[in-house]
Structures are given as structure tokens and as C-alpha cells.
Image (cartoon, rainbow, N blue to C red):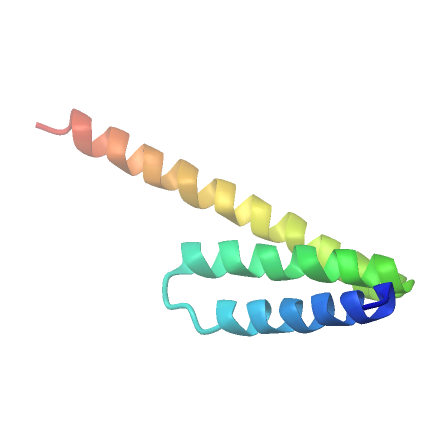
Length: 86
């Protein structure tokens, strides 16, 4: 299998992962799956020389990371607040 075929399959996998992420009801799972799919698209876009694909998906990766961190911080704060309540 040549490298072009491998990258084509990476693109297909990225598409499936993003599609699966959009079916998630849990926002945390959605963000994690979407992060994986977007990261695969970054690699795919870079490998095939599609810079716009790589750039927009890199932006999505950054957004997903931001919201994942925010979700975990909010969960930590809620746990902290519930632990201090009588």
C-alpha cells in the first residue's frame, strides 16, 4: 500500500470519527471525539498538501482543547463547592 492510499484512509477515518462525535449527547465525549477527528484531519491535510484543510482543523483542535479544559475546570469547581457545602 503506497503512502497516498494510507493518507486517503486517514481522511476516511477522520470523517467517520467527526461524524461519530456529532452523534454524542454528552458534550465531553463529543469534544474528545471531535478533537481526535480534527487532529486526524490536520495530519491528513498536511500530508496531502491541503493547507486550508489542515489550518481549519487545527483551529478546531484548539477550540476543542479550550472547551475540554473549561469543562474539566467547571467539574472540579462544582465538586469543590459541593464538598464545602454543609
